[in-house]
Length: 233
Ligand code: ATP
Image (cartoon, rainbow, N blue to C red; front, side, top):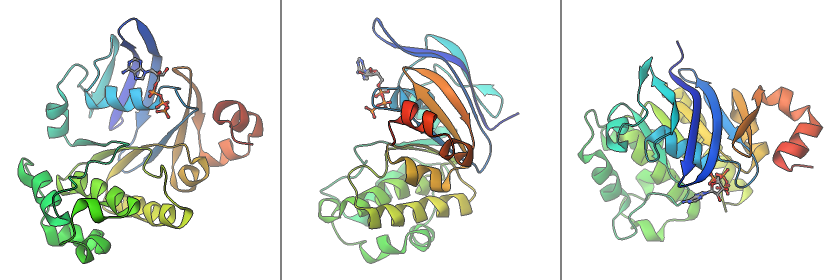
């Protein structure tokens, strides 16, 4: 049994059929990348995993138990957290307040000290308000807000979007720290090279269909797939 199993889900927005029999699996402590062109259905997959969207059919199992159709808060209570593309940071609150708010309703919240040990940069910035943080720091805080709630599975939606290469490198380090903390990561990214650099396995989505499953090494060596699937030359 895998930690997370997605079994032939179909998700629709009204009449628009977006995901077609999407199946994937995620093992404990793995980093799984979900790649594909714009509009392929990557965000829709994460939203369906999180319970924001209910699949019309198919099953999602967490540790063998079906979770599809459950409310997002309930799925969050089972240890799944989504870090959305738009970064979940309150601009008017300090870094520390942002972390405290996130920890409020968590069953087994981490201490601030423990979080700051994983994110030393946030310790330095703890008195700064969210809106004064750089894009990379906001992304870091957004991820830290998931971790302080003791999330076991962290869903990252395009964490590197709009960030300079040096900052992307910092965030790749952050993701590695999540793995060291025994977390499991599902990442959606347009920055294919960065995503492939630290993923254990990769799924390719195209027009709502899973068209590839394999290792980063296999995908990197497959120029046709890289080009057709991801638009990478
Ligand atoms: P992107 O990188 O652009 O976010 P993606 O692979 O994450 O790409 P999705 O956001 O999952 O793609 O979108 C998949 C399809 O669903 C697209 O055709 C999109 O137009 C459509 N879609 C997304 N959100 C909605 C919505 N709220 N209502 C209707 N259709 C939507």
